[in-house]
Image (cartoon, rainbow, N blue to C red; front, side, top):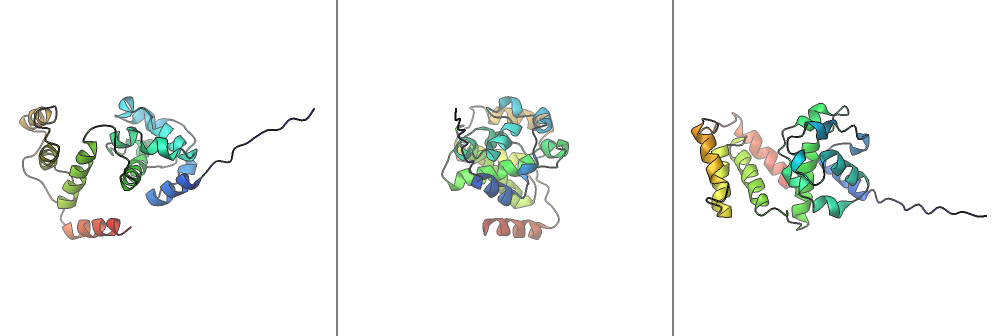
Length: 185
């Protein structure tokens, strides 16, 4: 009696592309779940950080790029700090957002790309995020005046959590060069 086993060859091009662009060796992930255990936004993701890495390893490009999870990462760096193999998933998530935008894949959440762009512009201007100008830019671009973004921002401002004036890094020229280098891809 003859038995045949059909093994489908996995396409590793997505894994290679994400690893190269992010600079992170995703082959080192062995699913210890430390990244997911520490992630403050994981409970809101349809795919947890470890699952995103596994999906990349499996070549599930479309599923990953269309997922909300890549837009929920707040780049707190908890995942990279906890990872025994020093994989910085925040960098990977940022890479995935870039790829999704380049390929015209929009986030499911309305206006989340505008929030992402407001964050990037805030960092570009001063070297770090300034929540007040970031929030105002987001509100103006999204026209989301009272639907949930302004009121929490005002409450945080009144509690002294958001400084009114931005603080800038000393070497703004370095920030400009970093952004120029990143946009030359």
